[in-house]
Length: 398
Image (cartoon, rainbow, N blue to C red; front, top):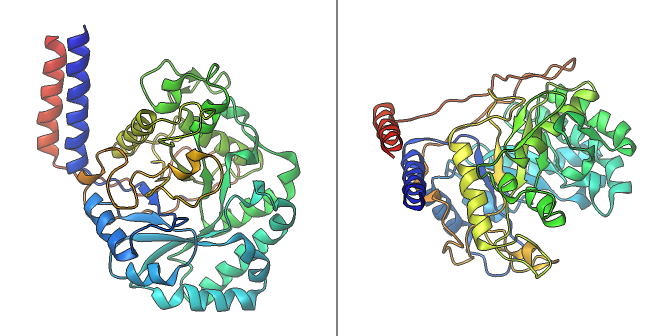
């Protein structure tokens, strides 16, 4: 039995690398954080991303050096408005000046496809003041983009932590924290009007770390497991990330915005942590991101929206040595600053053709289960057929 399982596992790994070579993953991006003093220059980062065949990344500012370097690279960029800028950018004139100087000069050579207005504003340390600035700043920025003829190319949203939810289990019980109700309603109305996605920073690692005796490790790592069935929808979930994403959909639906698309702006697993950070190991990090990539290669949707691929940005490209907090915060990177892999998840085999996605249409009356978002997959069909056939023959002979 042990030999059979080993062979099956190795064949699955070979199949993963085979698919990585032939398929273009339209829904996978990576976060390029810069809270470090030893990172390579942007030009070197571009070389690394190209070698990995990744065509989407997100940065946490509007660093002109990065925006200039990424010109004509074919890599899509989401840029970020720092939280401390929200109050200023409420003013339409200030927003127009910001877009005119921080965004417009780099387009179209640099493919800026999204603006993240703040980060985790609803649940940060300065929530009380920041949330009053958020939607007005988003409205002003979008108006500036429209005035400059850029709104059809650049989406405006804000990444939220999962802490915006009052309930997340089971997914159908998903609901927003009551105190966020008024501002959340304004925010969702903006997303619906502009056809922008709801971005969520979702980390199953945190749930496991806090309750390792209650939450199965395989469930959070995407490993084979019995999963859970939502008692209200009868939908089966075999991993926590998809359950978290669908909980957000249900929360939005309860406020009348069930047609909005959910995208994962951050998810990852630390490869190292302090003694009290249960599960923060190199092995778990490699398994989480490898299994996540396998799902992305299949352009999977969640159980609630199986036909809409879930767009995900992995956190993060590099370990960042200047990030405050526990050891885990400095060890989310797939790579060390010198460009060597912290662990191998097979990224170097990804297809190198740039791709783009379109936001789904919105329906404020109910939960939308489908989307017009592109699900185009480039593949060598005949070769994949032969490989899968060989896999089936192998399994039947065991």
